[in-house]
Image 1 (cartoon, rainbow, N blue to C red):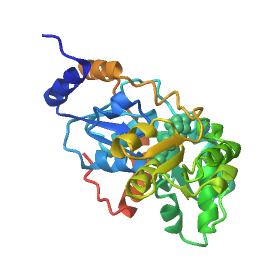
Image 2: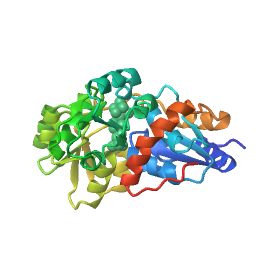
Image 3: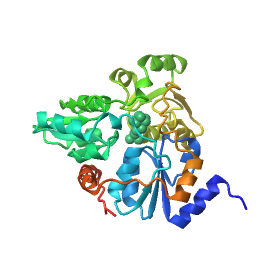
Image 4: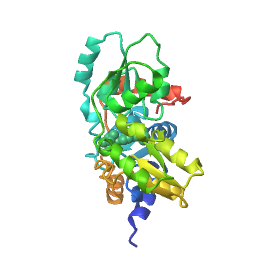
Length: 309
Ligand code: 13P
Ligand code: SF4
C-alpha cells in the first residue's frame, strides 16, 4: 500500500521516536505535521523538554543548532541543510573577538539568530521575545555588545534605556517591510491592528500598534477581540494565525516579506530526511560547550531548568 507523505512521516516518527519541531515561518503543509509550532524561544524550550530520541527541526540552521546545543546526545536533523539565516551569517566568531578586544569589559548579548561560534563568544543569548528581559537582567554599570541584529538591538536599547554597541547585521526579509506599506494598509483597513516583528527597522516599528516575536503576535491576535490584523513579519505566520483564528482577517503588510530559507523545507524533504536520518547537525564539542552556556543562562531566566541530554 502506498503511503501519503504525511502518513510516511507519521510512521517514521513512531519508528524513530522522533519529535517534529516547526517554526511558524515554515510552509503551511510543514506546520501541519509539527508536534510543536512556535517561535525561537518556544522551540528552544520544547527542545529542552523533549524525551524523543530524534529531533526533526523544520526551521533554519541556527534553530536546529540551538536544539543540538541543548541536546548534545540526541540526533538532531534538519531536512534541508541549505536553510541558513543570512543575518546569523553576518557575524563571525573572529569578528566578534576583535570587537570584544576593543571593549574588554563589555558583556555580549547574542540574538539566538547567530552561529554556535558567535554564541561561544557571548555571555547570554536572547530571542526576540525575551531580549528586553535579558538586557534588564545585566548589571547597569556594564557596557553591552548586542550581536548581530542592529534593529532588534536598537529596539531593545530604546525600550530598556541602555546604551549598547550594536553589530550591524539585519534580516533581509524584514528589511523589505517599509513604513509606507503600513500607511497604505491602514488606509485600506482603518480598523486593522498593526503588529510587527522587532527585526523590522525603527521607522516601521514607529508605525506599528504592537511589536513582538512571532509567539507574541500569535498570542495577541488570538486573545484580542478585534477582527482585522495587519501583520508585519514573514508571510508563513499567516497560515498559523488563520488556522487558530478562522473568524478573523490577517493581512500581510507586504507580500514581499518571504524568507527563502524558511521555505526550503517541504513535506518531501522532511520525509526524505527522516528516511535517511539526514542531515545531522554536528557542532565541534569545544565550541558546543561554550556556546551552550549563554543559551542555558537565557533559559534559566525564563524559569526553564534544563536537563541537558
Ligand atoms: P521569532 O523568535 O519571533 O520566532 O523570530 C525568529 C526569526 O527568525 C525572525 O526572523
Ligand atoms: Fe533569518 Fe530573517 Fe529568515 Fe528569520 S526571517 S530566518 S532572521 S533571514
